Length: 139
Image (cartoon, rainbow, N blue to C red):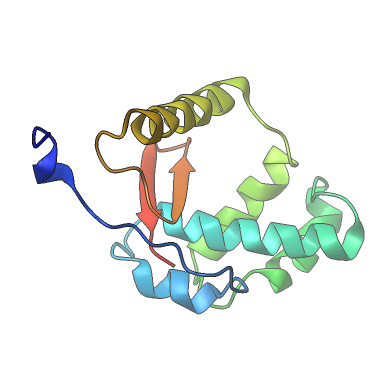
């Protein structure tokens, strides 16, 4: 009965609230590199681009300036230009290896919940496949 007592925690999920870029910006610890949190802000800008143009950014000469203007202002240079270039280069694609990693993490979290052992990830999980970095953001 008490074998997992040291891992007991109460996890409460807040009501869904509108995405707040400032809340993510407040979570960033390392500003010296492209932290996964910066990618979450960049993907927010890509979602705004998709909502406005009904497509993902894919043409560098045509989409660079509109996408750059939609990125949250919390992302500063040189990361702002680098992130914009990477988002256009990816063109909304999904790599099989990234899908496999995310699927593995999701299944591991499901096992934690089903087995009632250990504490599952709480809030938002961001995976940066380029640098192999990940972060959990409590927003």
